[in-house]
Length: 138
Image (cartoon, rainbow, N blue to C red; front, side, top):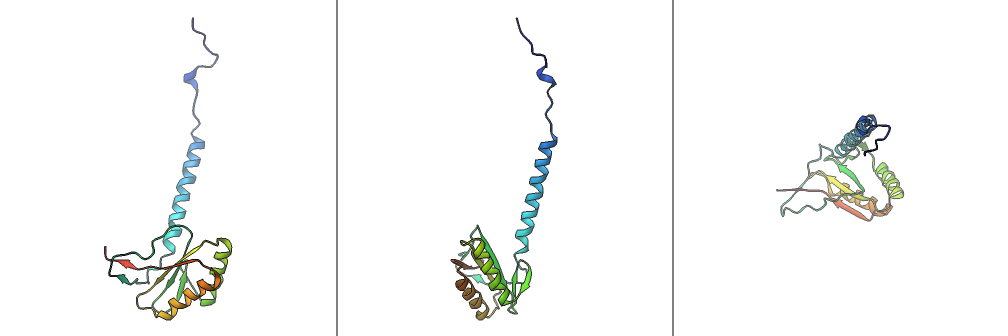
C-alpha cells in the first residue's frame, strides 16, 4: 500500500525570478569590469619592441598602469595627470594596498627622463615592484 502526501511532487514550481536576478547581476558585473580594464591602456603610446621575444612584465593582480606619451605627458586611467598627481595617486594606492605593482607603458620615443621620474616616484612612495611594458615579436 502506497501512502501519498497531501501535496503532489509534480505540482512544485521552481521560482525562476531569483535565478534570473542573479544571472543579470553577474552579466552586469562582467561587463563593467571588462570596460574598466580597457580604459587603462592608452592607444597613443607606441611601445618599444623587445628583440628577444621576452615579455618583461605580464603580471596579474593589483596593478596600476602609468602611460607615458611621446610628449612626456603622464596618463593614468585615461586621464592626463601631472607629475605631482602621479605621486599623489601612487601614495594613495600604496596606502590602500601595500603590495601594489606598477606597470609603466612608455612610448618608444619617450625621453628616458620621464620613465626615470616615474621609477623614482614609485621608489619614493614605497612601491615594491615596478615593471616596464614592451611589445614582443610573436
